[in-house]
Length: 335
Image 1: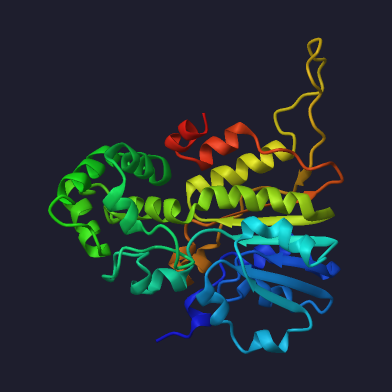
Image 2: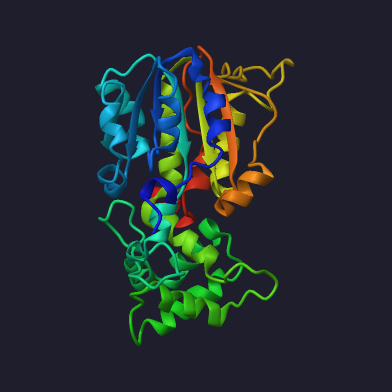
């Protein structure tokens, strides 16, 4: 069996580290520690200090012995990256020179059947990164058909969302869905994927994982938090793995970099645009090389986007970004 360090390979590691420019030294945050790939790479630069955290307690507990040897330059804590700005300020870890996120589920979580993230090995229908709160089984067995269809359609981009939701509600009357195999089997039966080699349950499982862990709102809060605490000239680098994550990151940087704004005259009373809080760098997104995908097939969908913080004030989160990160039913609850 592979060691924990080898089971999770930091995707686009060299490209993300280059984007952060740690050769300048300074203070950096790794918001998704995992097996420590980005953190370890940052610490190879002798003038860097790293504050790393992960919401998964097993990632913290499983940190290697090398973490102990780096204690004078590394602080490792259990937390969500949505709390980034609070953690940085509480620990007086400023000025902050760089932030990196590797968004989504880690290979370690995915490979452990008992965590319930994957249907490749049978396990409990769980998917909770922190091991507490609402589980995937809770959602599948208690949410109504409309809510389930919204999860699969908006978070999984699953075209057969309504059909899958209807079948779940029908079948759970006989017995609840408690295992990954039972749910994957139902999806394979009612919505077979004949045009692709991707398993029919892939998108639905992705959607449930996002809903269980509130991943898109967490991402949005993490981006906003990084904007608040990065020093002018500091870098923000995000590696994402599916279209919804990348859409949020792309739109966040687009809005923050002032894309789409013009210098033309405005209508009377029309507000001037905010000064850009980030400056985009180079051609993006950056994707893995052929050799990296060959060595690590899970890297194939990864995209890296990054930008440099300006001295402009941080901006509020737009309604457009919030709508992407939330289900329609959640927005109805706010009204």
